[in-house]
Image 1 (tube, one colour):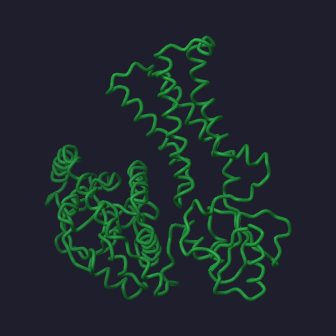
Image 2: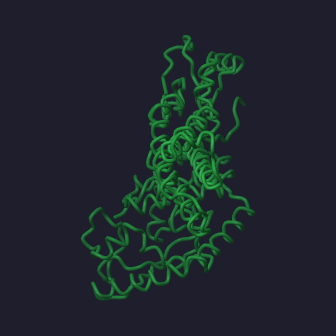
Image 3: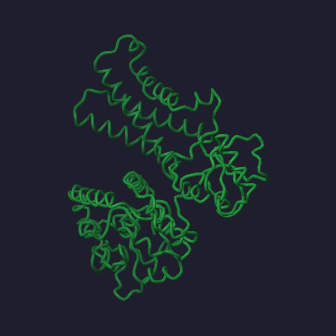
Length: 431
């Protein structure tokens, strides 16, 4: 086998820049130093004047240390997102990450009553935001993976992906073009292609399986092209599940002082606008295909005899309060009780109604395998795809769910929480 079965975003990073000046100007050290000069040194020089270059007092030294820490954290956290997750190449995510790092620093200095100029912290934060966007815009073309594609089979799927520069090879020759790797469907290549791939590997040009590249860049696992081996790999570890459950319970308990008043206010607003209970109960299918009762704040007009159906865009059944709590995902807050009962997790595939599960299980291959983990209040499919309103959209959503099950980890869970905050601010996928 030419490559491992599982890849990550870091393994698909740009590799074609071998020249000396490229290794300098595109290096992490150069980016860190130039960013520090622009985001920390320049604001300090403008704020304190040239005298700071030869006479730094203790307060100025503390301020330089604080802004340096904030910038370094911003730099490494944004780089981590860019290279480790599908969909991480977003200016919105970069903006939010820098804002969080500097915001945490400012709040920390206030709580600790540290003598640091707030004006300098804000100026450094603004400069850092400007710098990371300049760096992103000027370098994204260089760090966008450029692949040569041998046509046929799953490799054709990679050509349509937006997060890489995929170029079809007309013949088995790179023609002097520098690529970050060669992509092929190993089950569809002939002997000439096998010899060509071997030659590429011997000359230090990486060779990748098209299926693994597709999953890594798209954040989806094609459910109609899975084998028994794929199914066997979609099993999270016991240690991860225990740790995740402990974190779930801890977060729910810690946030209760905020969640309880918010819940009381939401329930009162719902009752004031329309008759009926504030809490809506419904059967859903959870882990192991077991049916449980899910709790939500009612966001639609109350109708006990209403038939089960997907909520559509601008659904007329949604109330005014319901539209707001759906956009902000406040309607999901009562599911904290499901988390405490062990029926759900904070992160995981969204649970569906039993009738929908029966229907999708007949139409979509391996559908019920998404029930191998606990369902979640938010999940990879929600932050990447949004709500599904039919079999076709559900198929895409399931592909995202399978990617999560196959790659679930605490770092991916943290990234999903990060994307969930962005979703709450933008209303992405709300219906």
